[in-house]
Image 1 (spheres, helix red, strand yellow):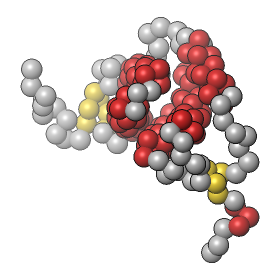
Image 2 (cartoon, helix red, strand yellow):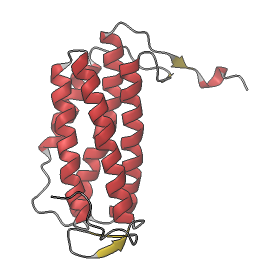
Image 3 (cartoon, helix red, strand yellow):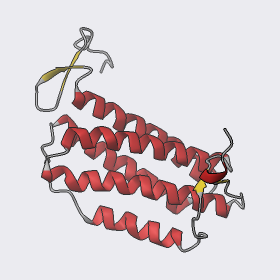
Length: 184
């Protein structure tokens, strides 16, 4: 099988619905955002694995797979082949709550970069947030997709907590940012 088809050389591509759209169509933009999120999550997953965080590695892989499924919803213009499982959101919330128990209360903003792994996780969080913004504008009124949007929101919450939790496990101090003491 060849990777190139030449059908997109004119700046159009085809959605799963069969409709051809320009490559700057809002559905293609959303697919691109999900693709980037999946890729950067792959970087997070490999770094977690290097540091022997096996449970977290599995969670990130599951998120990547779910984002691929979300891509099929986008490529189908919001049509869902099967109902979104609310349990996916609850599973992430449970992991967030468990990890939060190990963390100090957050009183300030955190500057990413206390260690390479947590900085990578923060980067992934910002990419997921961008994907979420595009997905919200795409599906704002589509009620069947609302649970999927909630899941993406929860993924960014999980990544924030995971970055803090990893820094703590690696014994790297968080870098607080006090907005009232910023120098300009």
